[in-house]
Image 1: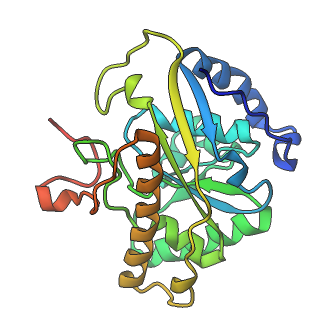
Image 2: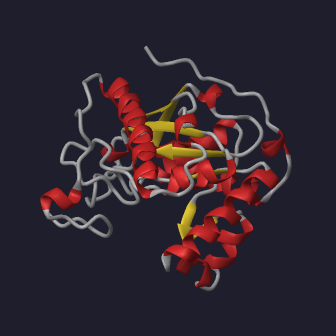
Length: 256
């Protein structure tokens, strides 16, 4: 039996006209042809104010699923994007117009300063941002979340912003990791589940100590893995996949 369609009440952010309305009018129906998205726990995404949404990442297609789900819930789907993309003609303007958030890949001092500035801006404007804590498509051969990077918790702890874990499953049926697009059959089932905010209170006030940020990130990744286990109906691995232990790069394309 198909799950009932959930209707979310309008939020102030979605009620205000913006460039997202024009994009959604094109993108959401197009995604709807390929995917039938079921959202579980959508009420756990804050209706107002800043948040960091942390999803798993196992397909090049899943950002579209995440964006469509966040829009349906009532928030604007803003992602972290590489700073270099903001300098690309046309694309850079589109990223800025939609409020996407640049992430620095330069010195640690520059990245730390940008984290503080970005966090303050999110709080000031009451915006949310979607951050893939894995930083790339998972290297785990069974598509479980791998070891995370600290960017999401850095951003959250800098501004006392809640981290909301998300798991999604099914996008690999449309576009397998580094595979070819599968258009048929249409309307494949995609499921998105959103969890309660991760309790990071034990890590607040510890500054930017790498060991603390690593432990906080592990807590977030474990929560995402638990949500994904609920979707898949099987237990998640006790430990996250560590690419360096298997001679793999942590970014870029993973060659077979």
